[in-house]
Structure formats: C-alpha cells, structure tokens
Length: 224
Length: 248
Image (cartoon, rainbow over all chains, first blue to last red; front, side, top):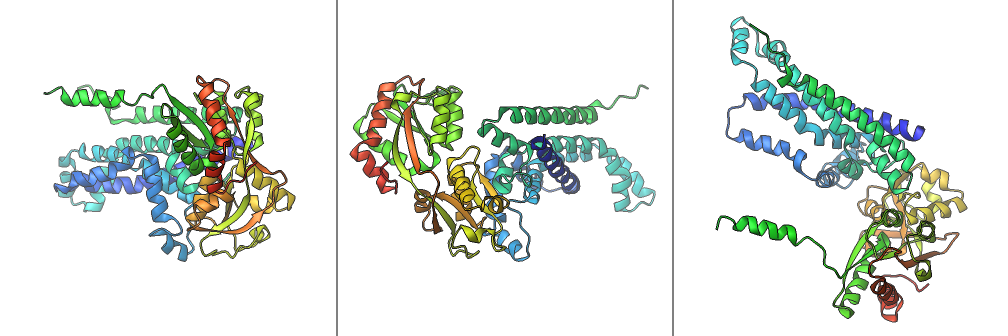
C-alpha cells in the first residue's frame, strides 16, 4: 500500500502548495487586470493563459532551461544553494504554472462582476483602498475565486508532463501519483496503476463537484 | 473559393493515414541513431517499404506489442524484455536472434564537477544525484542495478537515484548537468561525447546483448524477416559498428 500512499501524500502536498501560491498570485493579478484600463490588458491576459494551451512538454522545457543547474536563473539559484530540478519544490512550480490561468481567469471574471457602485459606496464611507479590497471586492468575488481554486487544485493533482520533466521520477521524493502511474504502467504493474488511477479519478471528481457547486452561476436567486 | 480552406484542411487530415507498405520497427531507445541509419539503408534497397521507427524503453515497447500495437519487428536491449515478449507470445520465437553487443559506462557531465572516477566514488558526499533507467522497465537500468549489486554499491547509489524513462533520458540528464553522474550504454555516451565524459567502463554480470525478432501479429512477416536479415547482413553490421555496437 506504501506504493500508493506515499505518492498520494506527495501529490496532495504539491497540489495544496500550488493552489495556495496561485490563490495569492492569481487573485492579485486578476484584480489588477480587472481594474487596469489599457489596451495591453488583453495581451497580458493572453500570455498568462498560455500555460492552459501550450503542450506540457513545452512548459517543462522552458522550466528546465530556466531553472536547471545550468539554466538562466538556475545557475544563479544554484550558487545560493537552491535546487529546483528533481525536487518536490520543482513539482510545485510546474503545477503552479499549469494551474495559474484557472485561478486567474475565474478571479478576474469574479472581480469584474462586482458592482463598482458598492466599492464607491465603501470609499464614500471613508474606507481606504486596501480596506475596500479586503472588505468589499474580495468577499463579493470569493465564490468565483474558490471555484477557480478548486479547478486549479484538480488540475495540479493531475499534472504530469511538465512535472516529469522538471521534477523527474524519484520514488518517495518527486514521484507524484500521475508519474507513479506512468512508471507502474511502463513496468507492467497494472494492479498498482489501477489503484492509483481510481484514487486520482475519485479525488478529481470530488474537486469538480465542489467547484460546480461553488460556481457563480449557481448562486440561488433571491425571490422578490 | 470559399470552400478552398476547408478542402485544404480535409486534405491535411486525410494525408495523416499511413501507407500500406509501412514497416513498423519497435526498437530500444539506445538503438535510436543506429536504427535510423539502418532504416534509411534498408529503404534504399527496398523502395516499396517505408521503415517507421518506434523508439522507447524495451519494456514499454514490449507492453505496446503485447497489447496488440501494430509493430512488425521488435529489437530490445536485453534478453529479459525479449523473454517477456516470448512468454506473452508476442513474438515469433523461431525468428529470435542476437544481433549486437554493447557495454555499460559511468558518465559524468563535461568537466566532471563532482570528480567521479569510478562507481566507488558515487557513495561520497560530492555526488548528490545519479541517473539511470528505471530497472523495472529499462534494460540499461537493469544492467546498472545488477552491476552495482555485484559491487555492493546498489543501496548507496539507489538512494541518490533519478529514474529515467529510457536510457536516452538518463543521458540527457547528465548532458544537461542536472545530475552528477549516470549509467548509459557506451554507444549512448558516444552520441553525446561533446557534452559528457566517460568516467569508467562498468562490468556487468551478464553480457549486454541485443535480441531481435519478428512480431507474432505482423501483417507483413516477410518484409519484417527481410529487415531482420538486413540488420545482420555485412552492411547492417557495418552501420551498427559505425555507432559503436559490437558483433554478437
């Protein structure tokens, strides 16, 4: 059973970290994009959506070239004693990058749906901008952001291509469920593979059900 | 006029289908460059045939063939994978023959940053990671494991192991300097000689020999047998020798 639980624990750790980072980064960027009035806005949005459409191998390659020991940033990080390739932190970076657009898109839509009059009212009542964000905008957008975060969590759980390229296949250290499934299938160990496939499927269905239940479209209308 | 892009699109979709004379050769990853050359030479002699190479770790190829993948020839990097194929009745046992030999080497990134000169150095603190094929599915990994077990170094090295999906991935990890050392076949090290150095030749308990066989379900067994014969012909041997493979 260790063959399943260790990769499962690692996968959950990686997916939770990736989701937490994306919540902070994604919400900040989404809020900026929702409020930014500039023609460059859609260009930035498109570039940030790239991880959703690029092949995972392309992302993995970018990460390897940037963060590898001989990479642009990697060589610099290496001197500081920070290693990302073949570490679980590397897997977090891959998952974060791949799932980022899911949080950012959902959060931007949620912020844009917030009635600006409510924010103006808060300002008139003397709240500072930071307080307007935390007490008005964020709570009103919370449902959409949570739905995006759950989708991102499910995506991070299943992340494979970029993770395999940057974090490798180190049993017990970077071997997440999807990488372990790949290794088990290659080795002909169908029993272990099947068990892990079931675990991933159930976890993702639960995350999707929660995301659907929290999605903004499902807010119950208040009858007059 | 308006339909022209649509027609072009349809043509593109239709052109993807394979021709009738495709000979699918599933070959171990370590044979990548050698079999590309062998395939070209075979095509020159048999213009009616197109050699389509399917390259991966031997056990991956075996799994594909055993599950009914439409391959015609199977060339693996060790006897274990071919034995499994024979046990699964995936190959025609009468056609099985050894066609090449190889060696196992310990390689390091150019410049040898961790100062590795032999397998005994891998246990030291300077070496953090060692790449080799996953022994469960990659022959080069199985040879590595057997060789290190013989030296009673397996436990120490496997604690630092980075498992590659095939021998060429292990080679790439070393060439990029992401690991301090790795185990590959000597022919793989030759392919990347400008980026990796051979630190030592590693003796293996069983010789590294490559078997080839016609796949049991092949729709063109004659063509497959002709390809197998070509690999073992003087011309085929010469091409393989050019990539560092020894005669069986």
